[in-house]
Length: 583
Image (cartoon, rainbow, N blue to C red):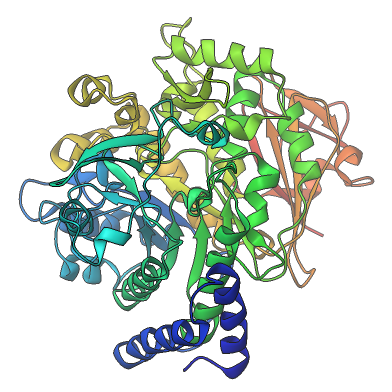
Protein backbone atom coordinates (compact mmCIF):
# COMPACT_ATOMS: atom_id res chain seq x y z
CA UNK A 1 0.00 0.00 0.00
CA UNK A 2 1.25 3.56 -0.63
CA UNK A 3 2.35 5.89 2.15
CA UNK A 4 -0.73 7.22 3.92
CA UNK A 5 -1.25 11.02 4.28
CA UNK A 6 -0.72 10.82 8.04
CA UNK A 7 2.52 8.89 7.52
CA UNK A 8 3.71 11.50 5.03
CA UNK A 9 3.08 14.20 7.65
CA UNK A 10 5.13 12.25 10.20
CA UNK A 11 7.95 11.68 7.72
CA UNK A 12 7.92 15.37 6.84
CA UNK A 13 8.37 16.30 10.49
CA UNK A 14 11.19 13.81 11.02
CA UNK A 15 13.05 14.90 7.91
CA UNK A 16 12.68 18.55 8.90
CA UNK A 17 14.33 17.79 12.25
CA UNK A 18 17.11 15.74 10.68
CA UNK A 19 17.86 18.15 7.83
CA UNK A 20 16.74 21.68 8.77
CA UNK A 21 18.80 23.21 5.96
CA UNK A 22 17.34 21.04 3.22
CA UNK A 23 14.12 21.35 1.21
CA UNK A 24 11.92 18.99 3.17
CA UNK A 25 9.26 18.65 0.49
CA UNK A 26 11.89 17.38 -1.96
CA UNK A 27 13.09 14.82 0.57
CA UNK A 28 9.55 13.58 1.16
CA UNK A 29 9.09 13.27 -2.60
CA UNK A 30 12.27 11.17 -2.82
CA UNK A 31 10.97 8.90 -0.06
CA UNK A 32 7.71 8.52 -1.93
CA UNK A 33 9.54 7.44 -5.09
CA UNK A 34 11.50 4.83 -3.13
CA UNK A 35 8.31 3.53 -1.55
CA UNK A 36 6.51 3.33 -4.90
CA UNK A 37 9.37 1.33 -6.39
CA UNK A 38 9.08 -1.14 -3.54
CA UNK A 39 5.30 -1.33 -3.92
CA UNK A 40 5.66 -2.04 -7.65
CA UNK A 41 8.24 -4.81 -7.19
CA UNK A 42 6.83 -6.26 -3.97
CA UNK A 43 3.03 -6.45 -3.87
CA UNK A 44 3.13 -7.53 -0.24
CA UNK A 45 2.23 -10.53 1.87
CA UNK A 46 -1.19 -11.47 3.24
CA UNK A 47 -1.78 -10.24 6.80
CA UNK A 48 -0.34 -12.48 9.54
CA UNK A 49 0.45 -12.37 13.22
CA UNK A 50 3.66 -10.54 13.97
CA UNK A 51 4.85 -13.31 16.30
CA UNK A 52 3.64 -16.14 18.51
CA UNK A 53 5.02 -19.04 20.53
CA UNK A 54 6.14 -20.84 17.37
CA UNK A 55 8.73 -18.17 16.57
CA UNK A 56 12.26 -19.44 17.15
CA UNK A 57 15.42 -18.18 15.45
CA UNK A 58 18.66 -19.81 14.33
CA UNK A 59 21.63 -17.43 14.07
CA UNK A 60 24.17 -18.55 11.49
CA UNK A 61 26.64 -17.45 8.87
CA UNK A 62 25.84 -18.51 5.35
CA UNK A 63 29.01 -20.60 5.35
CA UNK A 64 28.89 -22.07 8.88
CA UNK A 65 28.23 -25.43 7.18
CA UNK A 66 29.94 -26.84 4.09
CA UNK A 67 29.61 -30.15 2.32
CA UNK A 68 32.23 -29.94 -0.42
CA UNK A 69 29.61 -30.13 -3.16
CA UNK A 70 27.24 -27.22 -3.67
CA UNK A 71 27.45 -23.79 -2.13
CA UNK A 72 27.57 -23.30 1.66
CA UNK A 73 24.07 -21.78 1.51
CA UNK A 74 22.85 -24.95 -0.18
CA UNK A 75 24.49 -27.02 2.56
CA UNK A 76 22.77 -24.88 5.20
CA UNK A 77 19.41 -25.26 3.48
CA UNK A 78 19.83 -29.02 3.18
CA UNK A 79 20.89 -29.44 6.83
CA UNK A 80 18.17 -27.13 8.12
CA UNK A 81 15.45 -28.82 6.08
CA UNK A 82 16.48 -32.25 7.34
CA UNK A 83 17.06 -31.45 11.01
CA UNK A 84 15.49 -28.13 12.00
CA UNK A 85 12.05 -27.72 10.42
CA UNK A 86 10.26 -28.80 13.61
CA UNK A 87 12.19 -26.56 15.97
CA UNK A 88 13.26 -23.43 14.04
CA UNK A 89 10.96 -20.92 12.36
CA UNK A 90 13.39 -18.22 11.20
CA UNK A 91 16.99 -18.36 9.98
CA UNK A 92 19.08 -15.28 10.71
CA UNK A 93 21.67 -15.12 7.95
CA UNK A 94 24.59 -13.05 9.17
CA UNK A 95 26.08 -10.80 6.45
CA UNK A 96 26.42 -12.78 3.23
CA UNK A 97 27.58 -9.92 1.03
CA UNK A 98 31.00 -9.39 -0.57
CA UNK A 99 33.23 -8.06 2.21
CA UNK A 100 36.82 -7.14 3.00
CA UNK A 101 37.10 -7.86 6.74
CA UNK A 102 35.29 -8.59 10.03
CA UNK A 103 33.66 -11.77 8.68
CA UNK A 104 31.11 -9.92 6.59
CA UNK A 105 30.55 -6.74 8.58
CA UNK A 106 32.73 -4.65 6.27
CA UNK A 107 30.41 -4.69 3.26
CA UNK A 108 31.69 -3.99 -0.24
CA UNK A 109 28.35 -4.33 -2.04
CA UNK A 110 25.02 -4.27 -0.22
CA UNK A 111 23.04 -5.82 -3.06
CA UNK A 112 25.18 -8.83 -3.99
CA UNK A 113 25.71 -12.23 -2.41
CA UNK A 114 29.30 -13.31 -1.80
CA UNK A 115 29.93 -15.86 -4.57
CA UNK A 116 31.90 -18.03 -2.12
CA UNK A 117 28.72 -18.41 -0.04
CA UNK A 118 26.08 -18.79 -2.75
CA UNK A 119 23.49 -16.80 -4.66
CA UNK A 120 20.22 -14.95 -4.17
CA UNK A 121 18.53 -18.06 -5.58
CA UNK A 122 20.07 -20.13 -2.75
CA UNK A 123 18.66 -17.66 -0.21
CA UNK A 124 15.25 -17.80 -1.88
CA UNK A 125 15.25 -21.60 -1.62
CA UNK A 126 16.09 -21.39 2.09
CA UNK A 127 13.20 -18.94 2.41
CA UNK A 128 10.78 -21.53 1.05
CA UNK A 129 11.10 -23.49 4.33
CA UNK A 130 12.00 -20.78 6.85
CA UNK A 131 11.35 -17.11 7.52
CA UNK A 132 14.52 -15.05 6.91
CA UNK A 133 16.35 -12.39 8.85
CA UNK A 134 19.04 -10.22 7.19
CA UNK A 135 21.63 -7.87 8.60
CA UNK A 136 21.68 -4.28 7.43
CA UNK A 137 25.21 -3.04 8.21
CA UNK A 138 24.19 0.58 7.92
CA UNK A 139 26.72 2.43 10.07
CA UNK A 140 29.75 1.84 7.86
CA UNK A 141 31.03 0.34 4.62
CA UNK A 142 34.23 -1.29 3.45
CA UNK A 143 36.99 0.98 2.22
CA UNK A 144 36.91 -1.29 -0.86
CA UNK A 145 33.32 -0.26 -1.67
CA UNK A 146 32.50 1.77 -4.76
CA UNK A 147 31.25 4.59 -2.55
CA UNK A 148 34.63 4.90 -0.88
CA UNK A 149 36.39 4.60 -4.24
CA UNK A 150 34.34 7.63 -5.30
CA UNK A 151 35.46 9.45 -2.17
CA UNK A 152 39.10 8.74 -2.93
CA UNK A 153 38.65 10.21 -6.41
CA UNK A 154 36.45 13.10 -5.19
CA UNK A 155 33.66 11.80 -7.41
CA UNK A 156 29.92 11.86 -6.66
CA UNK A 157 28.04 10.41 -4.98
CA UNK A 158 30.63 8.96 -2.59
CA UNK A 159 32.62 12.17 -2.16
CA UNK A 160 29.93 13.35 0.28
CA UNK A 161 29.17 10.01 1.95
CA UNK A 162 31.86 10.03 4.63
CA UNK A 163 32.90 12.09 7.65
CA UNK A 164 36.19 13.92 7.85
CA UNK A 165 37.60 14.84 11.25
CA UNK A 166 40.75 16.27 12.77
CA UNK A 167 42.30 13.55 14.96
CA UNK A 168 43.74 16.26 17.22
CA UNK A 169 40.37 17.85 17.90
CA UNK A 170 39.97 17.54 21.71
CA UNK A 171 36.20 17.27 21.31
CA UNK A 172 36.60 13.78 19.85
CA UNK A 173 37.59 12.52 23.29
CA UNK A 174 33.91 12.69 24.23
CA UNK A 175 33.00 10.06 21.61
CA UNK A 176 31.91 6.72 23.07
CA UNK A 177 34.25 4.03 21.78
CA UNK A 178 33.39 0.33 21.37
CA UNK A 179 37.00 -0.43 20.38
CA UNK A 180 40.50 0.42 21.55
CA UNK A 181 41.68 1.56 18.08
CA UNK A 182 41.86 5.24 17.04
CA UNK A 183 38.59 6.87 16.00
CA UNK A 184 39.97 8.36 12.77
CA UNK A 185 41.86 6.71 9.93
CA UNK A 186 44.44 8.42 7.77
CA UNK A 187 43.54 8.26 4.08
CA UNK A 188 45.70 9.30 1.15
CA UNK A 189 43.50 10.35 -1.73
CA UNK A 190 44.79 11.23 -5.19
CA UNK A 191 44.88 14.88 -4.13
CA UNK A 192 45.77 15.03 -0.44
CA UNK A 193 45.81 13.32 2.97
CA UNK A 194 42.66 13.28 5.09
CA UNK A 195 41.31 11.64 8.21
CA UNK A 196 37.94 9.89 8.14
CA UNK A 197 35.68 8.61 10.90
CA UNK A 198 35.92 4.85 11.58
CA UNK A 199 34.10 3.69 14.70
CA UNK A 200 35.06 0.02 14.46
CA UNK A 201 38.20 -0.45 12.36
CA UNK A 202 40.40 1.18 9.73
CA UNK A 203 38.61 -0.92 7.07
CA UNK A 204 35.09 0.04 8.18
CA UNK A 205 34.49 3.68 7.25
CA UNK A 206 31.46 5.35 8.81
CA UNK A 207 28.74 6.77 6.58
CA UNK A 208 27.62 10.38 6.91
CA UNK A 209 23.90 10.36 7.67
CA UNK A 210 23.97 14.15 7.98
CA UNK A 211 23.88 13.94 4.18
CA UNK A 212 20.28 13.06 3.23
CA UNK A 213 21.55 11.22 0.14
CA UNK A 214 23.02 8.58 2.47
CA UNK A 215 19.69 8.13 4.23
CA UNK A 216 17.92 7.72 0.88
CA UNK A 217 20.42 5.05 -0.13
CA UNK A 218 19.87 3.28 3.19
CA UNK A 219 16.09 3.28 2.81
CA UNK A 220 16.35 1.91 -0.71
CA UNK A 221 18.63 -0.90 0.50
CA UNK A 222 16.29 -1.65 3.42
CA UNK A 223 13.35 -2.14 1.06
CA UNK A 224 15.52 -4.13 -1.35
CA UNK A 225 16.23 -6.66 1.41
CA UNK A 226 12.52 -6.98 2.05
CA UNK A 227 11.93 -7.67 -1.65
CA UNK A 228 14.59 -10.38 -1.37
CA UNK A 229 12.58 -12.13 1.34
CA UNK A 230 13.68 -10.66 4.67
CA UNK A 231 10.97 -10.78 7.35
CA UNK A 232 13.25 -9.37 10.07
CA UNK A 233 15.89 -6.68 9.50
CA UNK A 234 18.69 -6.38 12.04
CA UNK A 235 20.08 -2.85 12.20
CA UNK A 236 23.73 -3.49 13.00
CA UNK A 237 25.55 -1.07 15.33
CA UNK A 238 22.76 1.44 14.85
CA UNK A 239 23.51 3.24 18.12
CA UNK A 240 26.54 4.94 16.51
CA UNK A 241 24.70 6.05 13.36
CA UNK A 242 24.65 9.84 13.76
CA UNK A 243 27.78 11.83 14.54
CA UNK A 244 27.97 15.29 15.99
CA UNK A 245 31.35 16.52 17.14
CA UNK A 246 31.26 17.59 20.77
CA UNK A 247 28.81 14.85 21.79
CA UNK A 248 29.23 11.19 22.76
CA UNK A 249 27.96 10.21 19.27
CA UNK A 250 25.91 7.32 20.61
CA UNK A 251 22.09 7.20 20.94
CA UNK A 252 21.77 10.72 19.57
CA UNK A 253 18.19 11.94 19.00
CA UNK A 254 18.83 11.93 15.26
CA UNK A 255 19.67 8.21 15.41
CA UNK A 256 16.33 7.48 17.06
CA UNK A 257 14.61 9.63 14.45
CA UNK A 258 16.19 7.60 11.64
CA UNK A 259 14.97 4.31 13.16
CA UNK A 260 11.50 5.78 13.72
CA UNK A 261 11.43 7.00 10.14
CA UNK A 262 12.18 3.47 8.94
CA UNK A 263 9.43 2.14 11.18
CA UNK A 264 6.96 4.71 9.82
CA UNK A 265 7.64 3.59 6.27
CA UNK A 266 7.47 -0.12 7.05
CA UNK A 267 4.21 0.21 8.98
CA UNK A 268 2.59 1.37 5.75
CA UNK A 269 4.33 -0.53 2.97
CA UNK A 270 5.64 -3.69 4.69
CA UNK A 271 3.66 -4.05 7.94
CA UNK A 272 4.65 -7.70 8.42
CA UNK A 273 8.38 -6.83 8.58
CA UNK A 274 10.12 -6.56 11.96
CA UNK A 275 12.88 -4.06 12.79
CA UNK A 276 15.45 -5.36 15.29
CA UNK A 277 18.07 -2.97 16.71
CA UNK A 278 21.50 -4.25 17.70
CA UNK A 279 22.78 -2.01 20.51
CA UNK A 280 25.21 -3.77 22.81
CA UNK A 281 24.99 -1.28 25.68
CA UNK A 282 23.62 -1.17 29.24
CA UNK A 283 20.00 -2.29 29.49
CA UNK A 284 18.33 1.10 29.97
CA UNK A 285 20.06 2.44 26.85
CA UNK A 286 19.24 -0.72 24.91
CA UNK A 287 15.49 -0.62 25.53
CA UNK A 288 15.37 3.07 24.61
CA UNK A 289 15.16 1.81 21.00
CA UNK A 290 11.59 0.72 21.65
CA UNK A 291 10.79 4.44 21.76
CA UNK A 292 7.14 4.77 22.72
CA UNK A 293 6.32 1.63 20.78
CA UNK A 294 7.04 3.58 17.58
CA UNK A 295 10.66 2.61 16.95
CA UNK A 296 12.15 -0.92 16.88
CA UNK A 297 9.73 -3.83 17.10
CA UNK A 298 12.36 -5.93 18.82
CA UNK A 299 15.58 -5.43 20.80
CA UNK A 300 18.18 -7.90 22.00
CA UNK A 301 18.40 -8.88 25.64
CA UNK A 302 22.12 -8.16 25.86
CA UNK A 303 22.14 -8.52 29.64
CA UNK A 304 20.99 -12.13 29.43
CA UNK A 305 24.17 -13.86 28.11
CA UNK A 306 26.59 -12.52 30.75
CA UNK A 307 24.07 -12.79 33.59
CA UNK A 308 23.29 -16.39 32.65
CA UNK A 309 26.98 -17.18 32.48
CA UNK A 310 27.64 -15.56 35.85
CA UNK A 311 24.70 -17.37 37.43
CA UNK A 312 25.76 -20.83 36.30
CA UNK A 313 29.44 -20.19 37.05
CA UNK A 314 28.71 -18.91 40.56
CA UNK A 315 25.78 -21.21 41.31
CA UNK A 316 23.74 -18.13 42.25
CA UNK A 317 20.82 -16.63 40.36
CA UNK A 318 20.85 -13.48 42.49
CA UNK A 319 21.75 -10.95 39.81
CA UNK A 320 19.89 -12.72 37.01
CA UNK A 321 16.77 -12.96 39.19
CA UNK A 322 16.92 -9.33 40.29
CA UNK A 323 17.35 -8.19 36.69
CA UNK A 324 14.40 -10.30 35.54
CA UNK A 325 12.25 -9.04 38.39
CA UNK A 326 13.02 -5.43 37.48
CA UNK A 327 12.53 -6.00 33.76
CA UNK A 328 9.68 -3.84 32.47
CA UNK A 329 7.47 -5.40 29.79
CA UNK A 330 8.12 -4.28 26.24
CA UNK A 331 5.67 -1.68 24.89
CA UNK A 332 2.61 -2.98 23.08
CA UNK A 333 3.57 -4.34 19.68
CA UNK A 334 7.19 -4.83 20.75
CA UNK A 335 9.18 -7.70 22.23
CA UNK A 336 12.65 -8.91 23.21
CA UNK A 337 15.02 -11.25 21.40
CA UNK A 338 16.44 -13.64 23.98
CA UNK A 339 19.79 -15.26 23.28
CA UNK A 340 22.88 -16.49 25.10
CA UNK A 341 25.45 -16.54 22.29
CA UNK A 342 25.97 -15.15 18.81
CA UNK A 343 28.72 -14.55 16.26
CA UNK A 344 30.05 -11.82 18.55
CA UNK A 345 31.34 -12.44 22.03
CA UNK A 346 29.49 -12.03 25.30
CA UNK A 347 29.01 -8.29 25.79
CA UNK A 348 30.14 -6.97 29.15
CA UNK A 349 28.69 -3.46 29.11
CA UNK A 350 25.30 -4.98 29.85
CA UNK A 351 26.58 -5.92 33.32
CA UNK A 352 27.24 -2.29 34.27
CA UNK A 353 25.22 -1.37 37.34
CA UNK A 354 24.05 -4.97 37.82
CA UNK A 355 27.06 -7.10 38.85
CA UNK A 356 29.84 -5.62 41.05
CA UNK A 357 33.12 -5.03 39.24
CA UNK A 358 35.00 -7.48 41.47
CA UNK A 359 32.65 -10.32 40.55
CA UNK A 360 32.88 -9.43 36.87
CA UNK A 361 36.66 -9.64 37.05
CA UNK A 362 36.45 -12.99 38.82
CA UNK A 363 34.19 -14.28 36.06
CA UNK A 364 36.58 -13.05 33.36
CA UNK A 365 39.52 -14.77 35.08
CA UNK A 366 37.51 -17.99 35.16
CA UNK A 367 36.67 -17.69 31.46
CA UNK A 368 40.35 -17.22 30.61
CA UNK A 369 40.97 -20.55 32.32
CA UNK A 370 38.35 -22.05 29.99
CA UNK A 371 40.22 -20.77 26.94
CA UNK A 372 38.45 -17.45 26.46
CA UNK A 373 39.80 -14.03 25.46
CA UNK A 374 38.86 -10.54 26.64
CA UNK A 375 38.43 -7.66 24.18
CA UNK A 376 38.69 -4.06 25.37
CA UNK A 377 37.30 -0.64 24.51
CA UNK A 378 38.79 2.79 25.10
CA UNK A 379 37.24 5.28 27.53
CA UNK A 380 37.27 9.04 27.20
CA UNK A 381 40.30 9.30 29.52
CA UNK A 382 42.32 6.96 27.30
CA UNK A 383 42.12 3.94 29.61
CA UNK A 384 40.96 0.55 28.35
CA UNK A 385 38.25 -1.54 30.00
CA UNK A 386 36.87 -5.01 29.19
CA UNK A 387 34.18 -4.84 26.53
CA UNK A 388 33.55 -8.38 25.36
CA UNK A 389 34.28 -11.98 26.33
CA UNK A 390 35.23 -14.15 23.36
CA UNK A 391 34.57 -17.83 24.02
CA UNK A 392 32.39 -20.69 22.85
CA UNK A 393 29.36 -20.56 25.15
CA UNK A 394 29.52 -24.37 25.34
CA UNK A 395 33.10 -24.29 26.63
CA UNK A 396 32.23 -21.43 28.97
CA UNK A 397 30.15 -23.99 30.89
CA UNK A 398 33.09 -26.37 31.31
CA UNK A 399 34.91 -26.79 34.64
CA UNK A 400 38.65 -26.81 33.79
CA UNK A 401 39.48 -28.24 37.22
CA UNK A 402 37.72 -31.51 36.39
CA UNK A 403 39.15 -33.92 33.80
CA UNK A 404 35.80 -35.49 32.98
CA UNK A 405 33.25 -32.83 33.86
CA UNK A 406 30.04 -34.81 34.34
CA UNK A 407 27.93 -31.64 34.53
CA UNK A 408 29.29 -29.83 31.47
CA UNK A 409 26.46 -30.76 29.11
CA UNK A 410 23.77 -30.31 31.79
CA UNK A 411 25.01 -26.81 32.65
CA UNK A 412 24.92 -25.82 29.01
CA UNK A 413 21.47 -27.28 28.37
CA UNK A 414 20.22 -25.43 31.46
CA UNK A 415 21.47 -22.12 30.04
CA UNK A 416 19.65 -22.67 26.75
CA UNK A 417 16.45 -23.93 28.37
CA UNK A 418 16.14 -20.87 30.60
CA UNK A 419 16.57 -18.52 27.64
CA UNK A 420 14.01 -20.22 25.42
CA UNK A 421 11.18 -19.87 27.97
CA UNK A 422 11.59 -16.18 28.86
CA UNK A 423 9.22 -13.49 27.63
CA UNK A 424 10.17 -12.67 24.06
CA UNK A 425 11.42 -14.61 21.05
CA UNK A 426 14.28 -17.11 21.54
CA UNK A 427 17.31 -17.19 19.24
CA UNK A 428 19.96 -19.90 19.32
CA UNK A 429 23.39 -19.59 17.71
CA UNK A 430 24.29 -22.46 15.42
CA UNK A 431 27.42 -23.22 17.43
CA UNK A 432 25.34 -23.49 20.59
CA UNK A 433 22.99 -25.91 18.87
CA UNK A 434 26.01 -27.94 17.70
CA UNK A 435 27.96 -27.69 20.99
CA UNK A 436 30.98 -26.37 19.09
CA UNK A 437 34.02 -25.99 21.38
CA UNK A 438 36.53 -23.14 21.32
CA UNK A 439 38.04 -22.78 17.84
CA UNK A 440 41.57 -21.77 18.85
CA UNK A 441 43.01 -22.88 15.52
CA UNK A 442 40.82 -20.31 13.80
CA UNK A 443 42.02 -17.55 16.13
CA UNK A 444 45.62 -18.44 15.30
CA UNK A 445 44.84 -18.29 11.58
CA UNK A 446 42.97 -14.98 11.58
CA UNK A 447 44.52 -13.17 14.54
CA UNK A 448 40.98 -12.19 15.64
CA UNK A 449 39.64 -13.38 18.98
CA UNK A 450 36.02 -13.46 17.74
CA UNK A 451 36.97 -16.34 15.43
CA UNK A 452 36.91 -18.57 18.52
CA UNK A 453 33.14 -18.86 18.05
CA UNK A 454 32.91 -18.76 14.25
CA UNK A 455 33.99 -22.19 13.08
CA UNK A 456 32.93 -23.42 9.63
CA UNK A 457 31.98 -27.10 9.89
CA UNK A 458 32.38 -29.65 7.14
CA UNK A 459 29.23 -31.76 7.29
CA UNK A 460 31.21 -34.99 6.91
CA UNK A 461 32.99 -34.07 10.17
CA UNK A 462 29.92 -32.75 11.96
CA UNK A 463 27.25 -35.37 11.23
CA UNK A 464 29.18 -38.29 12.80
CA UNK A 465 29.44 -36.30 16.04
CA UNK A 466 25.73 -35.53 16.02
CA UNK A 467 25.01 -39.24 15.43
CA UNK A 468 27.43 -40.54 18.09
CA UNK A 469 25.50 -41.21 21.35
CA UNK A 470 28.74 -40.76 23.31
CA UNK A 471 29.54 -37.33 21.87
CA UNK A 472 28.49 -34.18 23.79
CA UNK A 473 27.21 -32.70 20.53
CA UNK A 474 24.71 -35.56 20.21
CA UNK A 475 23.15 -34.86 23.60
CA UNK A 476 23.09 -31.09 23.17
CA UNK A 477 21.78 -31.11 19.59
CA UNK A 478 18.96 -33.54 20.19
CA UNK A 479 17.91 -32.12 23.56
CA UNK A 480 17.79 -28.55 22.30
CA UNK A 481 15.87 -29.56 19.18
CA UNK A 482 13.31 -31.38 21.33
CA UNK A 483 12.89 -28.45 23.74
CA UNK A 484 12.68 -25.84 20.99
CA UNK A 485 10.03 -27.92 19.22
CA UNK A 486 8.15 -28.33 22.51
CA UNK A 487 8.20 -24.61 23.37
CA UNK A 488 6.61 -23.87 19.96
CA UNK A 489 3.48 -25.71 21.17
CA UNK A 490 3.12 -23.92 24.53
CA UNK A 491 0.72 -20.97 24.41
CA UNK A 492 2.16 -19.61 27.67
CA UNK A 493 5.43 -19.01 25.81
CA UNK A 494 3.88 -16.52 23.38
CA UNK A 495 6.23 -13.49 23.28
CA UNK A 496 3.45 -11.29 24.65
CA UNK A 497 2.52 -13.69 27.47
CA UNK A 498 3.10 -12.08 30.90
CA UNK A 499 6.07 -13.09 33.02
CA UNK A 500 6.59 -13.04 36.78
CA UNK A 501 9.65 -14.08 38.76
CA UNK A 502 9.49 -15.70 42.20
CA UNK A 503 11.67 -14.82 45.17
CA UNK A 504 13.53 -18.06 45.89
CA UNK A 505 16.89 -19.09 47.35
CA UNK A 506 19.80 -18.06 45.12
CA UNK A 507 20.39 -21.62 43.93
CA UNK A 508 17.07 -21.57 42.10
CA UNK A 509 15.22 -19.56 39.48
CA UNK A 510 11.46 -19.76 38.93
CA UNK A 511 9.59 -17.87 36.22
CA UNK A 512 5.81 -18.03 35.75
CA UNK A 513 4.45 -17.55 32.21
CA UNK A 514 0.71 -17.19 31.58
CA UNK A 515 -0.85 -17.35 28.13
CA UNK A 516 -2.34 -14.19 26.65
CA UNK A 517 -5.86 -15.61 27.02
CA UNK A 518 -5.16 -16.70 30.62
CA UNK A 519 -5.95 -20.35 29.86
CA UNK A 520 -2.47 -21.80 30.43
CA UNK A 521 0.11 -21.18 33.12
CA UNK A 522 3.59 -22.70 33.17
CA UNK A 523 6.11 -22.35 35.99
CA UNK A 524 9.69 -22.73 34.79
CA UNK A 525 11.84 -23.97 37.66
CA UNK A 526 15.63 -24.29 37.40
CA UNK A 527 18.50 -25.41 39.62
CA UNK A 528 21.80 -23.57 39.02
CA UNK A 529 23.88 -25.85 41.24
CA UNK A 530 25.36 -29.39 41.13
CA UNK A 531 23.31 -30.36 44.20
CA UNK A 532 19.64 -31.35 44.19
CA UNK A 533 17.42 -28.66 45.72
CA UNK A 534 14.09 -29.06 47.51
CA UNK A 535 11.45 -26.35 47.89
CA UNK A 536 7.92 -26.17 49.13
CA UNK A 537 5.41 -25.87 46.30
CA UNK A 538 3.75 -23.02 48.16
CA UNK A 539 6.84 -20.93 47.36
CA UNK A 540 5.86 -21.00 43.68
CA UNK A 541 2.13 -20.46 44.27
CA UNK A 542 1.17 -24.13 44.30
CA UNK A 543 -0.10 -24.16 47.88
CA UNK A 544 -2.37 -27.11 48.56
CA UNK A 545 -1.08 -29.01 45.53
CA UNK A 546 0.99 -32.17 45.75
CA UNK A 547 3.87 -32.71 43.38
CA UNK A 548 1.99 -35.67 41.88
CA UNK A 549 -0.69 -33.25 40.70
CA UNK A 550 1.83 -31.38 38.56
CA UNK A 551 3.21 -32.31 35.18
CA UNK A 552 6.63 -31.38 33.85
CA UNK A 553 6.10 -30.61 30.17
CA UNK A 554 9.72 -31.47 29.39
CA UNK A 555 9.70 -35.02 30.77
CA UNK A 556 5.91 -35.48 30.47
CA UNK A 557 5.96 -36.83 34.01
CA UNK A 558 5.25 -35.52 37.47
CA UNK A 559 8.27 -33.82 39.05
CA UNK A 560 10.20 -35.66 41.68
CA UNK A 561 8.95 -34.99 45.21
CA UNK A 562 10.32 -35.30 48.71
CA UNK A 563 9.10 -38.66 50.07
CA UNK A 564 8.44 -37.07 53.46
CA UNK A 565 6.62 -34.02 52.08
CA UNK A 566 4.25 -34.38 49.12
CA UNK A 567 3.81 -30.59 49.03
CA UNK A 568 7.41 -30.11 47.94
CA UNK A 569 9.40 -30.72 44.80
CA UNK A 570 13.01 -31.79 44.27
CA UNK A 571 14.94 -30.19 41.42
CA UNK A 572 17.94 -32.31 40.38
CA UNK A 573 21.39 -30.88 39.81
CA UNK A 574 21.23 -28.35 36.94
CA UNK A 575 17.67 -29.53 36.43
CA UNK A 576 14.88 -27.89 34.45
CA UNK A 577 11.11 -28.17 34.97
CA UNK A 578 8.32 -26.57 32.96
CA UNK A 579 5.47 -27.23 35.38
CA UNK A 580 1.74 -27.06 34.87
CA UNK A 581 -1.17 -28.40 36.90
CA UNK A 582 -3.10 -31.50 35.83
CA UNK A 583 -6.32 -30.36 37.53
